Length: 299
Image (spheres, helix red, strand yellow):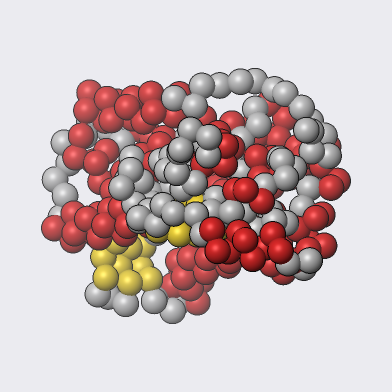
């Protein structure tokens, strides 16, 4: 059943109210904005709560945080790393092993705002189809960034990585960074649906590797209540991850979304008027029959 763009989310707003229909999206934007503001407070206002950027930072002069992907590129390039950088990377890895690596993509990454805006425009204009890229392309690009670093001794990817150069563009007004941002927007909006994050970005590919055993998951715990409106598939940045959890009852497949590519963005939770989805932990693999029964008998 096709979903009309103008009706996307209408039932959720009618059933739950506007705030609950956008709750997780609002919280994500607050998270992304708060992280950006923390990095800007120092250069702009001299308030150094956080020193550095998304690549490497020091919070309150105590807590070091380093992007493990950048640290690995640096090691492949043959650079010696300081103990604080290694420690910061290990802290970040531990966090994402617990909560899911691709939560970085939806709750931290500034490029997510651009790709979400492109996706919104695409739906608004009713653009269908486009260039189809393999989702494995991002893993090949990831591998190539390490190979190039190993062969050349240079972290070439970091010179064009939009995740790291966009904050610098905001601080210093880099024209080239804004050109890359606009290019990503145009690519996602008019060329390939969710093409950048879903098919090309090696950063998302790297962080997905940290998700295999993560605790935080989305659970289609009330999948019997699904009315096949398909809105969760329309709004999800990685819609292929939903199918096993939502459609796997006959095959005795868990209702937990276990794919490493789920970004834990929460939009499927927001947009579902039947409240089929919720955030859960990976060990709760039972669907609450009691809750389902209550919802079936309620008017």
